[in-house]
Image 1 (cartoon, rainbow, N blue to C red):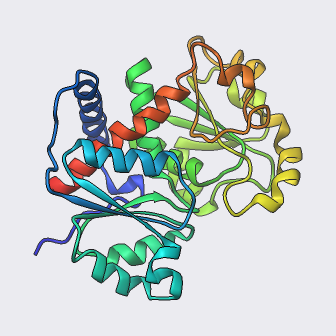
Image 2: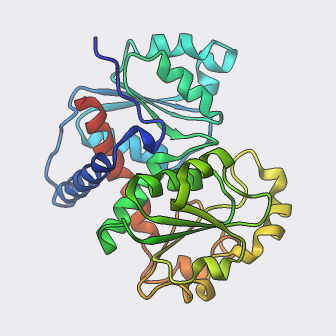
Length: 302
């Protein structure tokens, strides 16, 4: 039996595969908008395991699998034997013998790696503390739809060097663009990953300098799940890195800005930009559906 192909970070795809996946995501989006059936995964079952709360990830995967003709099972950590201490490897062996694909949204990235190493079917990382690759697929699709190829462009990340930032760093080295990470001291992304990205990623302390001439500005909440007790301290430190009109005006003409949501308005992003008529944030959110449908097709076709 051929070993299943997993999607735990963006590095599990090649640059050409990412571009093909985005093209397919746009095709699937068009089919849905036209009301045309596209049941390419009829009869397939996706198990979705959540130990972290979710809105966009759950809805996009469950709706996406249904639209592709399959079905999805929602499993929370509290409702399964994982919540009672069953080893991840044992759970993986059992669940993967009954379904065609597994998506996991959890805390430790090592848990997803352990599950994948014992799974008979493809495993998708729906978010861990270290990476959020599905989000970046949707973000890349959004950029391509609005501005075309991202290679050779300059992207600015504002705020904490978190899991979404880490996945953008992988995108930069795969797709050959520059990522400027604007963050204060102590909020840098993983040092080992930064080193691996070489000239594609650099740190800039001054947010105004980081935003200068960039083609895309991105931010995320300043306190991720599990960091709620740090919210006030983080908000004070990261206040100068708010994505607002003043920073956007320093970017290149026609620059886009994104936020993976949920957003804390007037903290990491201004309400003005959230509600602006030209924002692609809501398009970005919808594209989780289409990009993940293309991803599930790809993994099951292998």
